[in-house]
Length: 442
Ligand code: TRP
Image 1 (cartoon, rainbow, N blue to C red):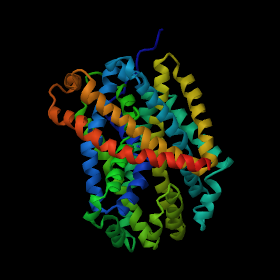
Image 2 (spheres, rainbow, N blue to C red):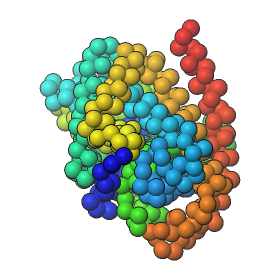
Image 3 (cartoon, helix red, strand yellow):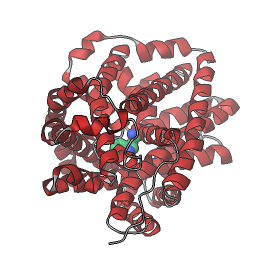
Image 4 (cartoon, rainbow, N blue to C red):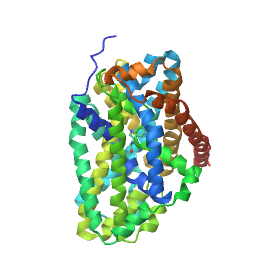
């Protein structure tokens, strides 16, 4: 089989912005805020940081190392190092990416629509009724497909001319918008109470198992781990690229965006007395509570809301790009051309997502299965593979960095801490996911 030579990133910055773009998405800008508010505020933020450093960061570094070394997509990366018996894991990765994108596209479709509506006519007074109208049904299918077309258009451009170019333009835009919004939010009356609610500290919460699980799950989802997305991006690095510093910068940036998003969201909600709605921790809350706030704020609300949803759209787009690239790069490794893979597989993702676009209950179950179960399973497998099975990961890691510091700490975390934490998460996530799946068919 003749395949074209592998593409590579044009610059280190380009790779970093693309990887941060994958990490920063719908997960940071809402999920993190309400989890923090519900689970002990500043105490949760600290626990989340600990989970990021102790559980997510080791897996991130493992994924980057596997991708860079294999110079292949996730379908083949583990086979490259561990032989054919790891092939099923590759299919798990690609399947999870396919599934996640199919419902992520629906949520992103809502985001696209809200952004467009903010330009056309602002935010409707009755946000809940509006959301009920647009979140499911043929209109939701249309916006979902529109968003995926945008995503596919960028992925079809390839690594340098598509993904890298988009990330280099879009990510600084996202940072700038978010920083601007945080400064604005600090000036609204009631900002102080918003911050206090966000960061009120309840260390008693730290002892509960659900909080531990939420923090670990969020760290994983937010960093795009467990299904080969970071592996795929690293496979377009050159073999001599440095990795440990990159992993730390990616994780810190992802945390910073999540944290700052909380600094935007809570003052706005408190200025309008909408804080009791925050507890409604469904995916819809983002599309009801905040638009409600924007509608009440009048002309300023329209501008602020437009900027907020534009930033959210950018985050969703750069994340969706990475999900589609997982599937597309695997097909390219098997001899498909990029345009055919993008069109064919992007179309298949779009069709699968129709089920989620017609019924938000289906969307919720897909999210639970993919996010809470498949990703954690994938992360567990990666930790076990690099921690116990792979031959000489130290030498592989050193390929770019020269000398590796902290190797024993890293491997120790992968061997013991990561599997232990993820096993606890799985033990509670699997029964919950099965239960919601059953409820769907009742
Ligand atoms: N990390 C993204 C977010 O926070 C979502 C995402 C993109 C993702 N690619 C992923 C999650 C791969 C899990 C795996 O919204």
